[in-house]
Amino acid sequence: MLVGTYEHRMDSKGRVVLPSKLREEIGDGAFATIGIDRCVSIYAADEWKKVLERLGKLPFSKGKARDFSRLLMASAYEVQFDASGRILVPPHLRSHACLKQNVTIIGVGDHIELWDTCIWNEYMEKIRNELPNIAEEVEGL
Image (cartoon, rainbow, N blue to C red):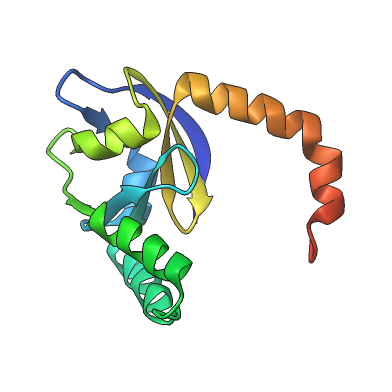
C-alpha cells in the first residue's frame, strides 16, 4: 500500500527522486498522468491497467465521460526510474501541477501524487479546517 508524505526537490531537468519505499511498492513500470486536483498521479503498471479498464466502462456517448477519458489518456506518460531512483516528470505534467523545485510526494493507497509543496500545504490547511464537516459527509468509515 502506498502511504506517507515525503518532501523532495525537483532538479532543473524535471527529475525527482521517489522514496525507495514507494519505488518498491510501485515496481519497475509506472504511468504518470494529470491528477484530478493540481497534482501528478503515478500508478504502478497493474494499477494503471485497472484505471484503463474503468475508463473503458464509461459511457462514450456522454460528453463529460469522453472529456475525462481523453484528458487522462492524452496526458499519460510511461515513467522509468534511473539508477538514482529518479523519474522525469514531463513538462505538460509539471505545468498542470505547477511543480517547481519543492515537491511533496504522497502515497494515496493505489497511487502516488506529486504536489508543489506550497500548494500541498495550502490544500492540507484547508482540509484540516474542514475535517469535521468532511467526516460528517463521508460514508462507510
